[in-house]
Image (tube, rainbow, N blue to C red; front, side):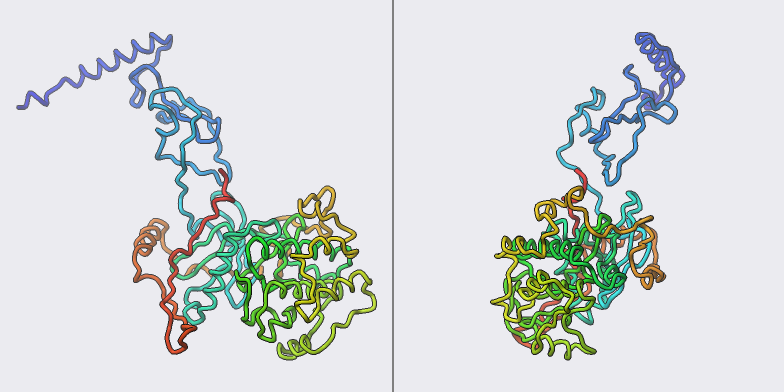
Amino acid sequence: MGDVFDFDEDGLSSEFEKNARIDDAEQGTEAPFSAGSDTDGQGVQFFQKFQSGGVVSVGPIGQRLGTSYKVQIDEFYDAENLDSRSNSTNGPVTNEKPKSITRRKPKIQDFEQLKVLGKGSYGKVLLVKHRKTGKLYAQKQLQKASMIVNAKNYEQTLTERTILKKVTHPNIVKLYYALQDFDKVYLILEYLDGGELFHYLREERILSEKVACFYVAELILALRHLHINAGVIYRDLKPENCMLNSRGHLVLTDFGLSKASGECRSLFGTAEYMAPEVIRGEPYDSQCDWWSLGAVMYDMLTGSPPFTGNNHKRIMDKILKQKVQYPFYLSQDAKDLLRRLLNKNPAKRINCDTEFETVRKYRFFRYINWDDLEAQNDDKLPPPILPVITDPEEAENFDEEFTSMAITPPSSPIGESLFETIEQSRSTSTSSFIPIQRPDPENSNDLKKSVYFTGFSYTNETLLPR
């Protein structure tokens, strides 16, 4: 029995070495045999990097003959399916692409927190950087614990995620990822390093009509897209929600109070910019957004909303009962458009959705070409405000009150490998989800079925490189 396992190790090694020299001699080269070399005479094998002309060797260290390459930003590399890159393991390299790529599931640990950009009752917005690509994002986060106390916080975050998931427009903020961990839910959004329009309005006090007409027109384009293409009523238009990107174009943000519906009755919004029909509790539709546009336009041109007061009730009473007073320095063109927008009767208020061609011809917009505006042709129609950005990571165009805040570290940091193990086990266990009890609208004494954070995570594949 022992004879079966007996063999001559020295003889076998000599035979391998002999064959290697013969193969090398046939190819016109002579090289000593070393572990890891291919014994069929073809030398070190290569594979082609997906979607690139770079070739990389997979031979042992010290014998790599291929050309090195650099993985580009947001490029995904699948190292486990090498056979799909070529027709055979020993055959020639082909340019055939695999049918599909399995992308690694993103997680919040992929992003490095840099600065606080804003803070509100909902939570914080942070500037974060993707650790591998270096790309900057705005990270909106909300504590899960706060959602147990106030279920509306969760509903608003879920609403924003749902709306941004289906909306694509250059004047509307982009959603890249929706993530969650043990304590929080996160929306990873487009970083608008130009800051808030309110920041420039506060510095300048008022904007000229030539500047204001550019941003009012971009707001009209954004709101029309929401109303017509997405069936969404925005409901919270105000200067603080109007951001500028690095090129100076206006981008609409914060969709927590928006509603994907044709008609609403809820009292939502910011008092100074709220339409009369919303305050009265009447059924309302997207016409309420055109009142808010008029209030924002008035704010741009005069330095304050049309109705102000020291509390919300006083402001709302003025909106319902008082007439709008127009300062003497406003042009007749500006007053004409404002009167059409700030009409307390929604039936008589101008509808920029259905009367868009009429709106385009208003003399107030004589400074712009609508086609160039929609195409964002900066050569022919450059934005009137060009943000000063020396270092995007410094968030220079955001309020120092927020950017100087210390970033709270994670409450219980753990290793990445351990986190992935726990996260995987939690994702399949319903007992680990945090329940949210909500009153049943049909029976105020009962609670609706608990809401869990299942299905919240999302990756916008359309924004990732192909």
